[in-house]
Image (cartoon, rainbow, N blue to C red; front, top):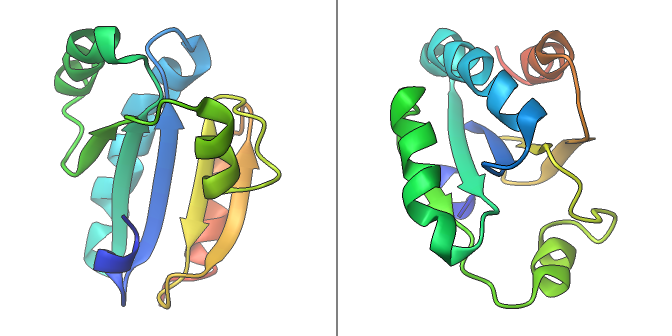
Length: 127
């Protein structure tokens, strides 16, 4: 998922329709991504909803004008999925991971995090 964005700073946001803080921060993350796109930020969202909630997840994405790419988690084993993304991640939402221009994870935010803190971490990596 991140490999196709080499040369860019990538913010990957894992969220779910049932996660109130996730939905609350979504408009702020969209604005942040629009503001920093020209400086080299790519924004990817991944819904951790179950497959039967896919329509609801797409509705939230549309309501917030979330730019593509966005994904719906398809893994059948949540623990393996979370461990693959980050062994320290328990699946707590929201979860955001920032990757540097080489594709290496530079920062993780697990749980509610002020968007200004996320922006500060991204700005350290942007020119």
